[in-house]
Image (cartoon, rainbow, N blue to C red; front, side, top):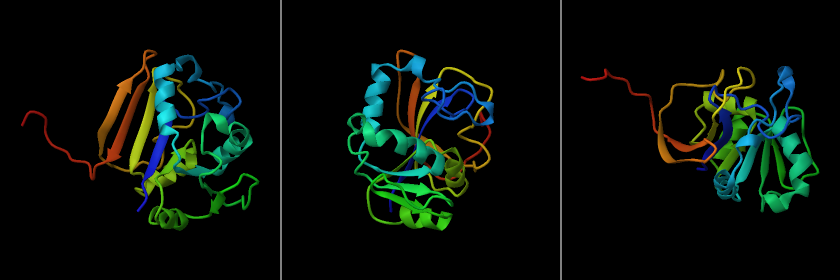
Length: 197
């Protein structure tokens, strides 16, 4: 069985929309695209380098289109990106010029992929796909970069797909610019109790 690892840049209020540049995703009138740029530093850059390994990718259609328009020509910044398999959840796209792109149509396709043999599978961006994965308990690990700002609007990481689930912190650090980098793995069901008893 393959692990599905969700990687996300998020604000303190959980927004994940358009972290990289102003025109990345303006849907819903979002005007804060590129909000991670002022916080980028060498510490965060080294973590990103480490996380950009040669795992296969699972992407939603919109994120795939953004990636496919950029990464094939900038692969020196992400070694192996053109060689890994890019699985794309889409009901409308069926092919791409970007090599090693495979299109999935349903939750059953994702479950079959997860139960196959191969490398870990990373999910970047892909807000709608993330909701589907969370709702169906298909996320094994969360690799979060939490930025010290609130935006008050935008697509959120934990939105309408979230179910009760426990996680264990496996790695953490903070950058000089105040970004908290925290990796979590799935740890079963939520436990409750009474504090102090």
